[in-house]
Image (cartoon, rainbow, N blue to C red; front, side, top):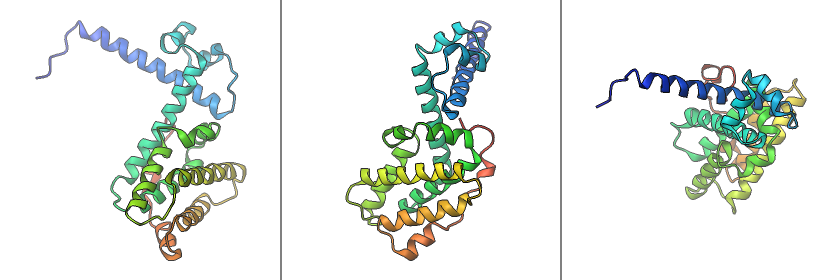
Length: 222
């Protein structure tokens, strides 16, 4: 049975909420600087951007590096949770892999700040234990186990996927005239063929309808 909230609980609850808001503000500020590629900004400037006191910073983080790591983890987890939400009802691991890739490609345009956070830390994406990498590896291994993919080494297939995605993101930011959806789907098709699907199957999987991103994405995903 849930214990009723007492007057003694209320101050603690307010304190916890205030601490959570302060931590979230610091993480959002750090993500902004990461997206800009500005990793040398002093702690004071981060706290000013977050509109919190310097002392509040050290109540949550021991160093700027720890904050940046938390900011990256938050961005990766936001991305991963979004993919789980949008691909959770799929049964074919090859389609799950393709849909996650295609959605991520579209997010480069729909969530530019989040995508810059990820791209400015591209080397970490391949070995990260959050976000797209572990989910892509899971889907590659499942698709291989069921015979949908024929890859010799799932981790190398993940490296190929990550390299393609990072390159795609850089291209879409540098070339705003490119059709993000068409470029992403074409690249997904090529990856599916590389991993063993027939040309017709790869094209069919990479052109299937996607969930409506506009209905679930708004503002910063982190």
